[in-house]
Length: 174
Image (cartoon, rainbow, N blue to C red; front, side):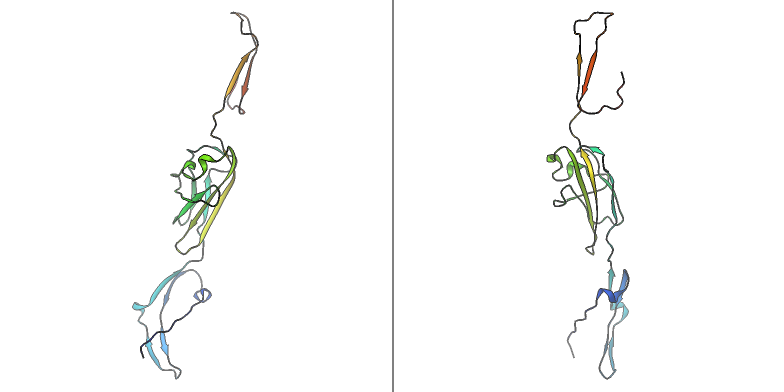
């Protein structure tokens, strides 16, 4: 007779990840085989239970960055990569293309440590994640002030000059 039957297959019955070919055979209680599906008309599906493997490669903990810093990462599937600084608002993210300023909220984030989040969702809905804590937002240029102890000195005389830096200087020698 014409009709249909719903079959339920548990994920555990499909075995390991990979392509699966589903065929059907109708067998009556008396053992009579009424129909066996043609392999060319069978249903093919791919079982995928593994999340994408993602890893932030820049910026990393203690890196001092501003909004122009490029976000870089590795992703073994690269299907729908997204970045966030609050783990709530996500934006599309491409390695070596997306800057921190492209991530919603970075421009209003206060100076100091923050966390960068990365996720990728594959077509099967598996989500791979990574985050990097302790990245330092530093968008304020350093300053230096010089004060002379004697401003009225003449050629041949010396005076003491005191430098005050807003940040620890690097590569500064007297």
